[in-house]
Amino acid sequence: MKKIIFSFIAILALSACSDDDFGSNSSLTPQSFQVNVNFDNENYDGLAAENTSVTLTSVNTGDEYQAISSSNGAANFETVLPGTYNVTASLNLSADEFNELFGYDPNIDEVIFNASQEQVIVNANTTSTSLILKAARIGDLVIKQVYYAGSNAVQGAVFRDQFIEIYNNSNEVIFADGLYIAQLYGKSSTTVESYTLANGQFDWSQSIGMSSGSSANTDYVYTDYVFQIPGNGEIHPIEPGESILIAQNALNHKEPLTDNNGDPITIGDPSLTVDLSEADFEVYLGDFRESIGEEPYQWDIQNPAVEDLTIAYWGRENYYSGNKDFVIDTKGRDSFAIFRVDEEEFSTYEDFPNPSISQIENDTKFFMQIPNSLIIDGVDLQSYNPGSPRPKILPSEIDASSIAVDGIFNSQSVMRKTKTEIDGRIILEDNNNTSEDFKILNRADPKGF
Image 1 (cartoon, helix red, strand yellow):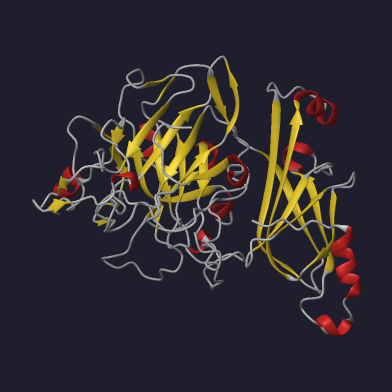
Image 2: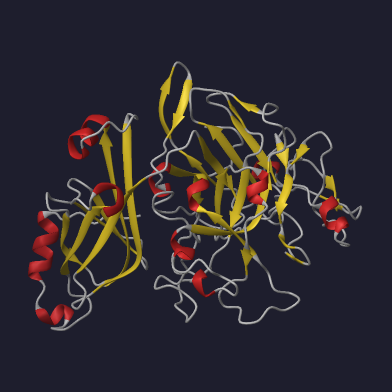
């Protein structure tokens, strides 16, 4: 993305333009804009947030304007082109800075605050907005890499080679047993409808059967599918600085294969795809589909040497999802979260149709409601096409932004950046701000850095 830098030359260029260059009432006339940033009132008394980094990102062009808030929490942008912007704010406080500001020890080395707001209009009638900073939730396990773009449909493996990688960012062994992985669901465009919020995202308070009121949109996310890592608590250790790889199909996609119908699958250029035959887990839906009277998917090929994840949720019973395999949207319109909860409580979670549904039919899809408070880590992906953005799903304290690859079927993945290395153990960035924490890899690299 191109960053707008207010240099002397830029100011001269603007001053050299007459009213006629923009038109006296033109929508292209630059104007000032202010973002007021405060800490949340519940936990931090609504104090003004000084030294907060605030970014305006144009929805249409991706151009960025940046400013730092003053002592009264105001971040002032002197010249901004009118348009629609996504606004993000972030502030990192050391333990000493936190203690000085709030009067107590946070018991961690650094406290990260984030806030975001989408679809903010900047024009002559709208000259300011406000953001509330919330402390980012930092977990020991993080989503390290998501490979969703897939590889060339003719020379590669299409979407069969997709995977997710989860990393132990702590200095202690963590057992993966029982961890839930959720593929989240939301609206794929920012078009505002009667059943959406102002940013175009679903207004889940309008869902049939919903009793959560406005908290349906602030305290929960909604998921298409939930998978769980099997084990009794001490079977699948993740060592510090190591990761587990979850494959859609745990196969060597560089080599020719035979699908479930007995048809050959050829690979024209092995360099475009990946070898997932040594993945830690795979998502196999064949047994589940047979249990509901359906045939296994043609390309859902099981590797008996790799352990299957448990399918914890695939839609409401008798209203199961029509999707035949764990397929991530190659255009980047998915989000993911990892969380823990005991299975008894998980079984009590409700599910709802999306808010556009006015009547339950035989083919209605349902989406499970997951409390945000359980989420250890989450990542919002974004459409590869800047002209067709989708609204965020995750709240800013879990992920303040999003990331997109450059296209579909281009072999790219998104991977968390390295922050530092201590005694050979790599520590990854975890600011709960995906656009800052992640980078794009031109070739997916399972368990790479």
